[in-house]
Length: 204
Length: 82
Image (tube, rainbow over all chains, first blue to last red; front, side, top):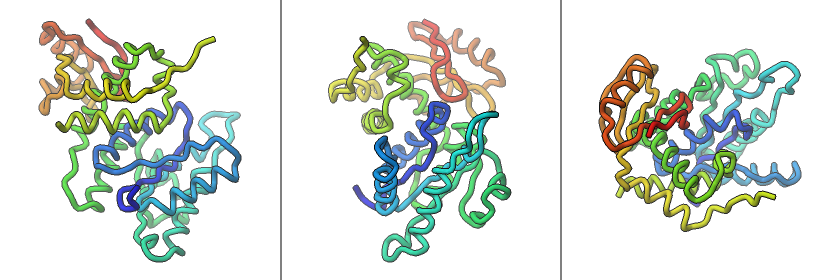
């Protein structure tokens, strides 16, 4: 897998985040990029080794630190995303050769929330998605348009195609006997395979 | 006991083929704070409306043999009108 086309995604993997993650993956595939996500559920040691491998072999990274605070009373704030973001920025700062070319985009749910919680990252490319998939697609596209220096599909067309793909995926998988629960819990790699094949076919 | 279904290459291909199949559906979906009505595969939308109800009304008027897919703000399917 090419370094120049790989995008490491560092984000929460809970069901609540899926409404942002799936449109994000679909957008990257629409830009002919390779989204890469750790799906390792083994020990913390193996997981972090896998994440470091993804960081070292991906030119681009997208970090979503919007879940760094507890969503409701009683929840525990999660620091895996800020930790992995630190590893990625460190890789770019202290790495050599092509690692110096690494670029990262940081998402938070609200503008400048990071100023309070993680002020050391000011100066990086930080955007707010407002927990809205359409906004996320617009911001991701804006960022890649600047970096890739080539024509990309519009944010509106990506969003419209995404809704059409979701319909096709749900209808076809239901015909194949998949339950709604099974469709909702497809792994990231399964979703990537389905979406990338659908996008290729839609271009014919 | 329920056995989780496997995503086989054949199923992946069938989903992909839907991208180039004329399903003749109308989609009602949110876009930039408004609601649009769009036909499958169309590059231009049928119209842009201030509310989902207004968009749905137009979709129902345009519906012939097709079905209407109403999406929620996450892009997922909220309702199917056959």
